[in-house]
Length: 181
Image 1 (cartoon, rainbow, N blue to C red):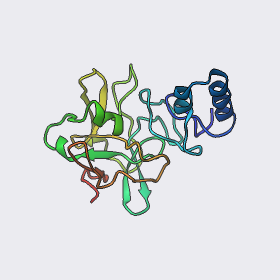
Image 2: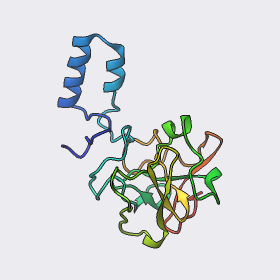
Image 3: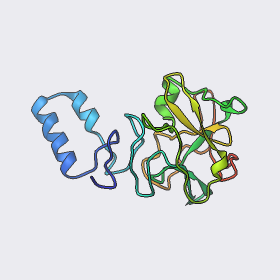
Image 4: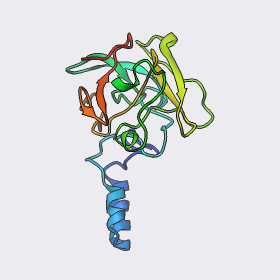
């Protein structure tokens, strides 16, 4: 498995893309084409739950990285920027579900994992979890549930920063647990 291809994530360009195209041509289904779509080998956001391995560690790891234009912020094990949702403030739980969660997938732990993994630059005492309505455990930082943005397709991107969507504002999170505005 390459660094750009993980279970539940878009297929990379190359062999997997060719197989996808062959399946679509063979089946003649537009739905297949949509399922095989990828943005030029970009990482993308998980679609089928939390991936299990990344370049820096597990996909559900909370670590920090220097993101150009933001400074040092929280990222997952793949280097994808993690966000907080302002309406979650003070609740200790996620207020983002349904359509919101399809655009802002929560950082969740895989089945059977109950403790988040922390990496360099994070304060392990600030990392926790909250139970989502579907029963999954979402990773939190300083009480903020953490999310990905579907518009970030590669490590170091921050296309969700300052976005007003799904009833509130979204911001990357710094290592102290504050919104990076």
